[in-house]
Amino acid sequence: MIALVLSLVLTQGYAPPRQGQDPLDQVHEARVQLLGKQLRCAVCQGVSIADSPASMARAQLDKVRELVMEGKSDQEIYDYFVDRYGEWALMEPKKSGVTLGLWLAPLLLLVIGVISILSSTKKKDPAAPAPAAEAPPAEDDYLAKVRADLDK
Image 1: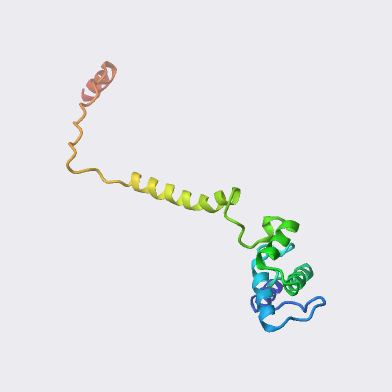
Image 2: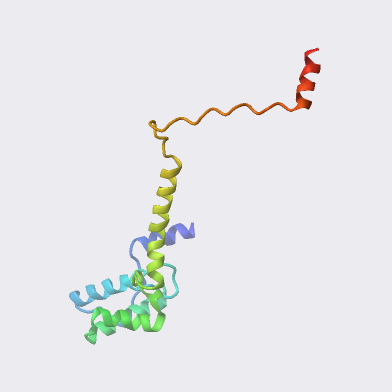
């Protein structure tokens, strides 16, 4: 029951009040929220700092707000968090190096799967000659004697 209530609260966009900073003007606050949606909460699994109820996420969002007030660009703000928390801090990591392999692996596996399915279900070419019927295997002597005894 608690999990259900918690999930309903989180899907409604509820977050505890900010730690100490007042919201900025509407344009800057919208930018803060947009940047917050792109940064992962350090204590939550797969939740952005804008959506997380954790106090650390609130502090991180306040830091974003502070950097926006200082006039930092979006890239400078992302770099600030990547320097402190690594690539994991981004909700969508850059597609280069090792992460490029992680992005391409599902696509590659899908292509390999489709090719293997198509090759295993490939129908025989009707124009191809039918294979010659194999001659029945020669009967060995013991089996011939057993059959002869059964016929008696």
